[in-house]
Image (cartoon, rainbow, N blue to C red; front, side, top):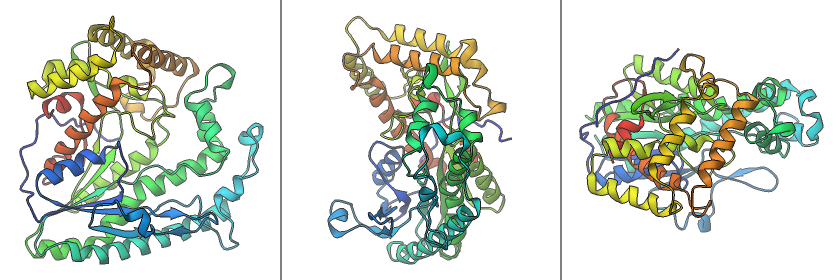
Length: 430
């Protein structure tokens, strides 16, 4: 089991400078963690090389972006489709895993049997495709890296939910369902559909990191021979420390469907680190993103950042602005103290603690625990003037930026192959 290793002090500036390169291995979407890393690299004068996962045509084929689609993407940009995973990859008969599930009805999901031989073929074909495209990406990349430059590869790959209609209703019932609509996460994960999801998560979230490090090895060795420095960063999630009753303590969101894939990602970083490669998986705090809306409740752990900023916010002027922006979104009679007391009570409740054990992570959910989490989330939403304008969006921006600073500067010589960024460090870097 990976040992909890929280980074405590704000990293000193790394030697990254103008002419050095940040390579985004994966597509940059709005309101995601990687935006903070890009912002910090730009601040240091680095060149950002962008990438794409490509797009799927109606017939399911994967393609690069069109001229129109690339028009607003800052250059340099490498238009090689880096989509990972096998859910839409045909087997030898032209059948994809999504095809295997297209006729499954909601009442049949638990008894559905999958043709694993077909899935295995699709999986192998997808790995061949991905590795080939990664090799093409590396060849194109060389032209953007000056001799002897320092390079950071930022692994942005995550996800892998099979794109077939039966999946979303199941996820909604697992992560947001209450009463009779609730599906226990273990029941989903143990089903063949759940097993398919978990396999695809591993391909997208962790195996892509293996391919990145291995396929970039010739370029890495060439740059190092020229006096350059190469590092790899990746985004993990394994719970993080937040301020609870005045002390920073580890907590997590349960059930985290991708937890097993993220653990595999951590193991790969540990293996590569032993080979002398500068690599670190940074476990970042919970945020509100465009893709996290299905996981209602994950944002509850973001509210305690208010208390962390009040306690440890390093830039007083900026901290005051953030807090003022948050206050403006809350109902007039709501105070930060009320929110902090509520989240303190939530995070120390026996029901929450039973599903927030580091040594047992990732845990499956319980019906009572999920209902308590969702009710707590609704209660916090109701403290806002407009439930579509949440303080968690403001606080997420703080997390992006702080994590970007920490990851870029720690990456030069990572203190560990797997590290945690808690709310204390986020506040120190604000």
